[in-house]
Image (cartoon, rainbow, N blue to C red):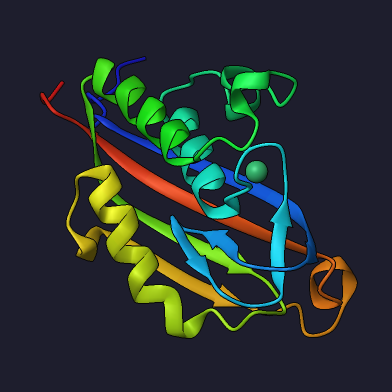
Length: 168
Ligand SMILES: [Zn+2]
């Protein structure tokens, strides 16, 4: 069987969720949203940066965030999730890949994400060294149903597309 050379593209998928607790701020997408909620976790619990990290790692078949940064390790307690994103970025760089774009979905009943979307996009783009036009962030509620809809938890999903720096 013959096959044509494949384009040097890789797709990655990230998913994460955290329980929500009383008392703000909520760290998400690298920014802090003031209010009466925060995400509970071992690190800074940035549920969006965790999904972005796993999407990047998945695209190059690297170990996931839980294996790279175990939540049993003291050095990861309260750790800024920017560190995880930068480590994933290093992994894709080692494999001669660069980011084409990423598309992110936040699932949360509250707080309202709309006023903060642009700040998240700017922060994420700066972190990844890409243009803000390559970073999409959108938010949905849980329509009052399930753990997300009743405000017990927050979740994110991220897909990322990578392209080889050098064509195959
Ligand atoms: Zn997480």
